[in-house]
Length: 439
Image: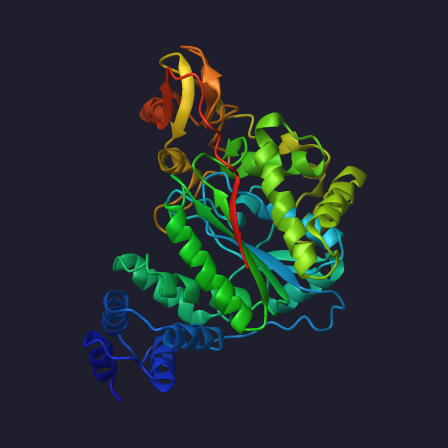
């Protein structure tokens, strides 16, 4: 059947057979479908919708469009965590070495930041020499050697997704749950996992701003994982303010290493709390521990003993980075950076944070990218000890901006000030970090 005939079926509200969805994904991969034909069918899917069967078939075909990794030679359960992205969301850098130190292999395929959301690969490249471009054989070898490895999506893993995502981004068809599920799960299922824990964000800095939409996405991804025989659970977590203290690549790695060193600043407590929760759930699903309390205790013991930090050090060395940053995290901070204090305009209580505005402002000064091929400045960023519910004086410090020059600072400083809503109210409930658990 010709591409236009398949497009017409979905355009007119019909349901595509498994065979036709397979032909579509094959056409994406072998380039027998033109970009405009791919975009037309994706738009028809977006408008007309996909049934549960169609969505599951799309995941399966995208998954099978490339290589499915096999870690069966490693005699440990295999688990990973995936986040839908946010501002200051850096937990992967803690979770991977922590869970690996507890006896679970973590083959983590991660992404780069785009728009206001940061990317794990960009953060890791803040470590001098760290290589995130691993071949499949290198990826296998490093997981076997130190219990986890962190790499980017290769051309062999779910190749249909890379093309489809680029066209969805260009044609405003990203925010449709079955297509989001197919994109995320086709990559994660290709890792050869036994266990997957999902961190689905909700709030002003999240892709799914409303908790209702976040829960719908979480349920869909959990159901998909279970249908593919991967134990899957989703945590819906708060993104109504940046996670932890720092936003920016090098400074976020700095925060994570300090946590792994058991040197946790008060403002970084939420980063540790969420990392601990996600790690514990991975351990329970992987049958390493029988309940969450014992799993949390095991994780805390691995931090206090230094085993999690040692595992991260070993991984950095395996991936050609400089492991001495584990001994001296200050090496990650560029001495040529200018620090600017961001002051509150009035006295009161912080009632809300425009997290999206903070993420976009950090991106604008070089900390992120608008287009996938743009380079970033790992050193710039933002730090804040102030959270929703905190009281601040007029002229008090909302945070500190790390910039290259005064020109950068003057261009974005007002946005950081306006991102914090300060009102003369007596009290406000702090948002719960963990909103819900699904699965």
